Structures are given as C-alpha cells and as structure tokens.
Length: 253
Image 1 (cartoon, rainbow, N blue to C red):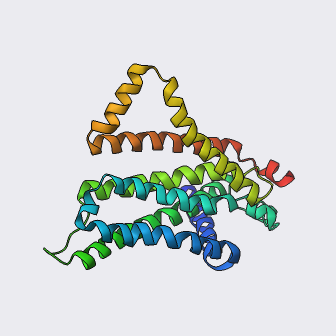
Image 2 (cartoon, rainbow, N blue to C red; image 1 turned 90 degrees about the vertical axis):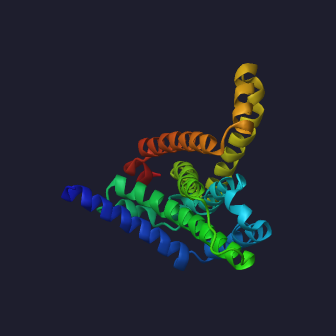
C-alpha cells in the first residue's frame, strides 16, 4: 500500500477513535440515553430469548433477523450526531479546518458508528452463546452453526452500515441533532411502510414469486438475497454521502 493510502487509513482510524471516545466519555446526555436504550434490547436479545429457547435459538431463522435489526437501532441513536452534533457544539469548523481529507472525515465518521453498532451486535451474539451454555448445561458446549454465525456477522455489518450511511447523509445538512433524528426516523418509517404498501402495486406474478421465495425458500438463499440487497443500498447511500460532502459548503453553513 502506498504512503498516501496508509496515511488515509490512519486518518480514518483517528476520526473513528475520536467518535468512540466522545460516545463513551464525553457525550454525557447521549451516553445516558444510549445505556438506557441498550439495556432492554441486550437483555431481551442477548439473554432472555436464548435462555427461553435453549440450543434451538442457534438454528432459529429469527436470530439473524434480530441481530441485523439490533445494529440498525443502535447506529440510528448515534449517527445523527456525526455532523449535526459537531455543528451544535461549534466544533465542525475546527474539524473541517484540520489537515484531514474529506475522505478521512467522512469514512472516519462512518467507521466510528459502524464499528460501535456492529461490535455491540457481535458482543450480543457471544452473550447468546454464554447464556445458552449456562442455562442448558447438557450435552457439552453448543453454539451457532457456521452458516448462521457467518450470516449474523455479515448481516449485522450491513445493517449497521445501512443506518450509518443514511444517518451521515441526513446529518450533513441537518441544523440540529434532533432534526437529523426526526428526518432519519421518518425516512426509515417511509421505507418500511412504503415497502409493505408498495407490494400491492407489484404485478401479481412477481408478488406471488416473492412471497413463495420468502415463505418456502431455504434460509441460506433468503439470507444471501437480503445481504445482496443491503449491500447494494449501502453502496448507493455511501456514494450519495460522498457526493454530498462538500467541505466549503459545510463551513459556510
């Protein structure tokens, strides 16, 4: 790798580390809210559900879905602060005036949010393994099958990337964190509800094929299809964020 590429990666890591330190140590109000928001999902997904289901939890088709949803939820609670929060704290001008390149700032912000949400999801999945083995206590050590473990790792990463990229895109132009959160929430609801209502406008043959694929298709095919769709949307959102990130415009705003 060239020196320029190495320097960019170091700068991205620096910005991501700054984001993590602010979440954990500096943003007191965010930290309190995040801890409260994390407690219930982690308790339910990490301990209660696997304790209730035992080893069957490791092969349930619901498990990868829930661990995809979890980082989406977590990243949505922090990503709106990426630029709107800097703007509110009057630190955006300092960040933009630094030697850091546009790429380093944008991808550092993304990496910080993705790494935080994805890391918590993977930690929660490990908590599943601990919980089931403590509660079940029969027949030796049990854990996720390899294909399910891979699905959780990949889908949770793509889920974290989805909300992080969308949140950065919103946060770039939002005047406040609250405004960014409201806009992102409306966008997420529009996608979910729009997708549900939009199905009735799809030609009947395609609708039947989709329903059949989801209901009777094998889990691996569904997960691969979901990963492909998420990856495509993630890439489109990141490209949109790169196109919208204009340092001089942000300084003037």
